[in-house]
Image 1 (spheres, rainbow, N blue to C red):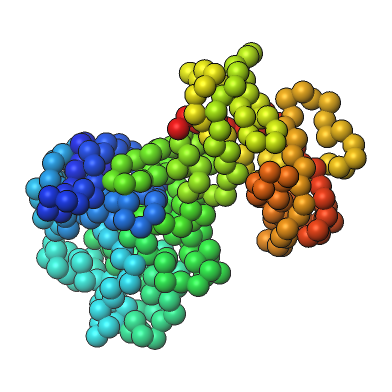
Image 2: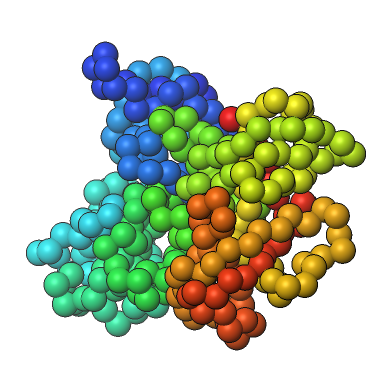
Length: 361
């Protein structure tokens, strides 16, 4: 398998639209990297530039060390799965999977038959070779599209939102299945999605895009727990964000003005009194306490009082929304069965300074 290197990749459409803005990315051989971001951020254009369906305005694309910037798609040895699967309706499953190998012209009939059988076994549909695409479920079609992309033994697998058309339960099942297949083969994979949960679940690393640039690249847990910017915190998962200013820095903690209370936020390196910052608190970092009692003896605990305005069950967890005295809404998530608070109840919640993330604005 081969790694992928993007160097200064830029794509303009005319003089007004800058879709990808001078991005660099190093993807190691066998790595699963997800490009994630809102619609129009440039993630699909980046993927299509790797595939050869878009020619960069500037910069380069290297696959396995070879410069393929100007090479057409069929010379890049990549396999691609599209959002609509793009299976040929007039061909059987066997013929669809064999198509790329037959187009190459470098395989004998016996090699094609053996490889198709291997791919159908890999996607756990070994008995489906004689069926047509319209005889398959959405999840089965997705697996066949994947098998077709992998059959010619590409150096890299490119996935353009291939799970977007599936229902939630099937989509979750296919997330696990797709990751299993990728790990079993060990193929370098670039996956595009705007679904944050999907990106967090499947990836070795995330590349979070915004307005044509990478805001943050790193392992899912780092991007979630340690966002580098307000945008990343707000886009990846749910976040309570306090836009505020630093009032003081002491012993590695910055105190910020957050309306009706002060927040002691960790990671104060590089900030000073007066700096404009955002404090990020993930919903599961809050903890409930009795309103009448002290929340914590820890001076580093940040305390909020408010009324529960909304509550919903998420299966193993419960999400509550609190309105504080200054009109701020907080999102708090806790394990199901841990608390019995209901809308209308007044509660107190706290979060430790070490569970707050401070980013400059």
